[in-house]
Image 1 (cartoon, rainbow, N blue to C red):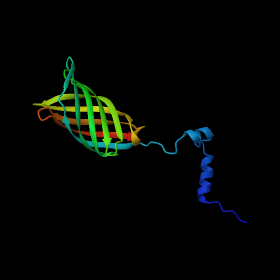
Image 2: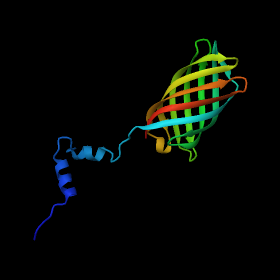
Image 3: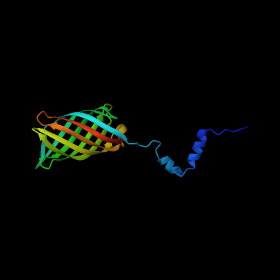
Image 4: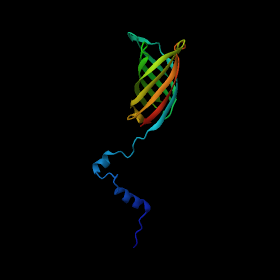
Length: 166
């Protein structure tokens, strides 16, 4: 009886002998079959600005909410919760994107803002994805948020560009 080695079996045997092979059985159990790979993340959002609340000298608490079209979430909602230092033109932000199925992607970060016209403020922030639910439970990554707020109409638009691992 002749035995034929298939190319797949031969490749698996040779791979097991390579220097990169995992040889510790416990490491094989602890290493997930899948590994998170960074993927591009983009979003375009239209938001309504809720009236800000003073929280200290030169500090306001502001919440913006609305809808986005975002990669990996599809049509989603966004709630952006900020503390803005109007004197220094800085802000801290927590952004929660919620997909149609309820999965959430949460990022926190800091940014700047500046007056660019009567009642118009341009802003930029960098957020790190730090939390989430559902398929985003272990998500990591970061994004740069840029946009402009119309403080007279109480509306803003924002775009996000970055990467995500989940």
